[in-house]
Amino acid sequence: MAGKVKIPKGEKVTIDHGKLRVPDNPIIAFIEGDGTGPDIWHAAVRVLDAAVEQAYRGKKKIAWAEVYAGDKAQAVYGADCPPNLLPQETLDVIRACVDAGRDDIAIYTGNDDHIVGDLVTPYRLQTPDGPVERRIVGGLLGHWAVWTQRAVALLAECHAAARARDVPAGLLRTGVEVTDCNAAVFDAANAFHGCIAGIHEVLRRQGLLASTRTLTGETLGPGQASELDRVRRMYPHLLDDEFVEEHLETWLRP
Image 1 (cartoon, rainbow, N blue to C red):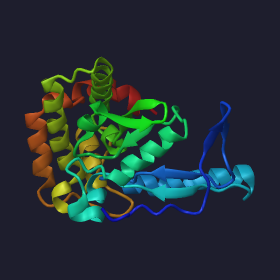
Image 2 (cartoon, rainbow, N blue to C red):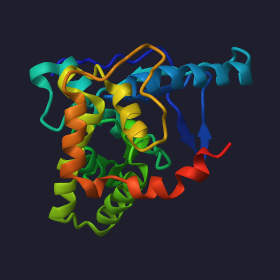
Image 3 (cartoon, rainbow, N blue to C red):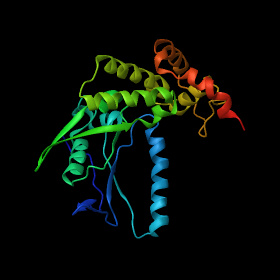
Image 4 (cartoon, rainbow, N blue to C red):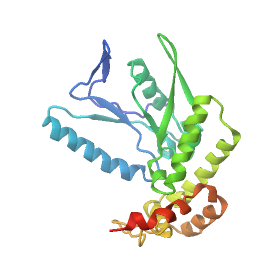
């Protein structure tokens, strides 16, 4: 597999005798993610860089290194991308964290095609002290924008299954259903054209937004409204409409 990850000029964050050592130009890896991931990341990195600049007045600066997962990995690696959309180079970054002695790093996924699978799959890495397991503990920020109560419950189910090392078939089935819902909300059929508008449409139907207007003028993609109707009919157990209705008046109170 051809190398796609470009490591910028910078230094590793390390632990020395139990103390965290952060250089002036630490290399920090990120996964942009799919769906709303690029929009969220492009805004978040500006905030993070501005915070570092404000705190250290130019003495420190993060060296961001992009690694790939999900649809972007497929686009970047093409035929070399594995079926789970987690390239070996991305796993190598996780391995580097383990080799550095870091056990305080939370790994998140932006893979909206395999979110449940990512959350329950252990990754075993060999170190000089023996095998070490790491797990993805969260992710898919866009999914938390809609039907959030169910997303919280699903995350708890995934964590419980991971701890028990017993993944029920029903949980894997839910993962397939979540992927179908995400495709409708994020408008995967139209190359994510209606990604933000899809989120707004779900919130509009729940009474949380007055319209689906966006800052960029984005609208629902062709057929996206019908897809949202379909997944709502097929997967009512993934919705939190009753929860929202119960609290809507309180939340919208001036």
